Length: 454
Image (cartoon, one colour):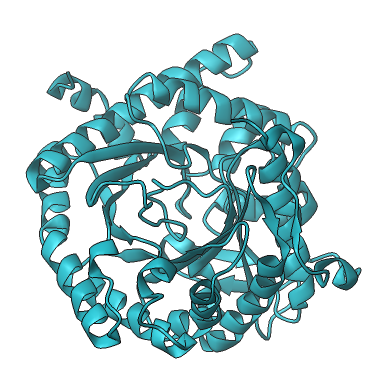
């Protein structure tokens, strides 16, 4: 049982250490909305979302008031739209009408974001998958709240390099389509290897086809809480360090469990998972990079960074999994550059490079996240960056992702301001040597030998 004593114990974490429930995300299946008529399909989607999620925001606000726990975002994820729109959509613009319907529904119910404008193409693309992917620049430039994701690879299937090459182009086109807002559309677009079905965090959230008709997932975040706890054991052994992180993660996850159970009960929708992710914000004191510094590094990116991040990620998962029977999603530590003031400081100081970030993704929860790069970066270079990151996920049987923003009209040394939770970022240099001949090959990279398990 979770009781009010446990909530009271976290008051200091909430008031002084930036603990929050980052999101309550309602996952909604749209499979029963499928229709060969595009207008009926859009009507079905709008009606189902606005019916099921009509009380989501109000419920989140009520729980927040009653328990004193900040719930920063209320979000919706839906079935990957490539699966839903295939019967009705014959052009990319047809798919873009669904994005506008999702945006309208999200605004009607008052959520912060809606995710699931997605395609799953780790082994191959259907015509519907390709049409949706080609519609992404239009979809993200004509909506405000829609987030898009594409799963390009998995340990079981390998990496779909045709889709990787295409996504290099789509990311550049999305940057161009939203260049008046510093290419903000790319901040709502992420590509994955081994994407989980139950991820409540944007931009990669979608409602998996193995899920129930509707589900409640909760994402919790508390980098500031962990950092404060570690200050009390400064200079102690690794054993003490690890125990401190585990115990702190346990307490954080219990808050999420309480919120998830309450939201599930009040909305009469099954509870799915808790995602315990140390997801930073631009607020001072709410930084994963600061935790790494507290562990003993001058800056994130210094020698020892990957080892410190591996330790942090593992202990967070060990603590969280004891606090809830259903831990899932991306649980662990995020390292988004623009959303983490400590990461930004490390980039400005020259301690953190794109290559070091790639090494860190081998042991963190996601991948290359919210990284601003020069707007003139070639689409083939972006495809090469994606391929490298997906290979890490495929070989290591973990989720990896890429969310890079080629900021049109800006170059290395300049800064881009996204605002809100997305923060701001210095433009990072990218290796200028060509990978054109590699990414322009056709086909897919085969699954690794250890994928063959049945």
